[in-house]
Amino acid sequence: MYSRRLQRVLVDFGAESAFAPASHRVREHYGIEIPVSAVRDCTLRHGKAIAVVAEEIKPRRNAKTIVTEMDGSMVPIVQAGSGSDGRKGKTVFWREARLCCARSAQEVEPVYGVTLGTVELAGWLWRQTAQLAGWESKTFVHGVGDGASWIVDKFEENFGEQGNYLIDFYHVSEYLSAAAQKVAHPGKEQQWQRRQQGRLLNNRVGAVLRSLEKHVEPAKNAETPVRTAHRYLQERREHLDYAGARQRKLPIGSGEIESGHRHVIQHRLKIAGGWWTERNMESMLQLRAARANNWWDAYWAKTRN
Image 1 (cartoon, rainbow, N blue to C red):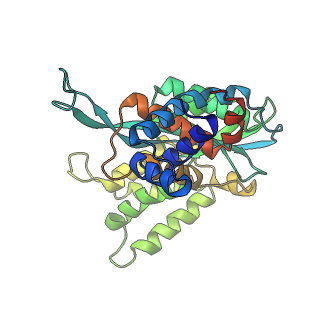
Image 2: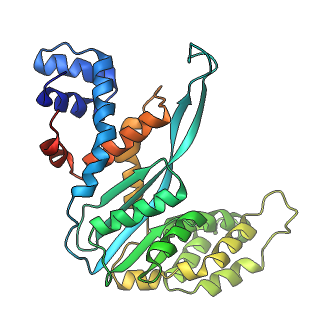
């Protein structure tokens, strides 16, 4: 068994780079030869254990307003084949890791939560993450993200009585951009799109819908970007209060969760050639989230072996 101090070094390197390069870094910086398998085993073991630290973290001070986001990110998973040699007949596929974040509107650093689990588990984790960020009974909750039904449903279930969910403005703009190619005169596509964006920012959703209605394609068409944009906006009208968000100086885009995907998940877990079992992926996700939350020192302070 390695000393606690050396374990911390191994996990530190293993959390940030592939296990082979991590082993090389230990040798370079400390002059110690550590097998790659030992770096891997130590990192995964502590990744599995580190999730419990959230239970002992004190929530941040009560927040007047919470900004919170949720989104999914596809991660690479491998499932061993049957028989003595699991390498034969193995299957590789992509699973959705559900990442959420929450912070007081007066703060910069969010609290992250992540899971490979069910939508129900993701909803529970979202609630816990908001509580750690300072959510309480009088807090206004501002949610922002794409229009995926499971995300909207879980927001309403957890925070609906205390806040509003806003569809990411730039996500909506992608639908308008596609529709512009069919609606606007050639060369006027950007002008038409900017006009509709201006209307949305002033909560004139009805005007945008009327502009689209005249050009809605027959349902039988192979491509229906105008029909798609119209349906998307119509079904989400109650989540398009951009004027209200801007008045409160709250974000209208989901850039925070997109950034979280990159530095919490993708930086380590979507490296070239890297495939993970579900169990190991879950351990690494918890490790990466804990580090992003600055729980690293708290975890090692309570670790005895």
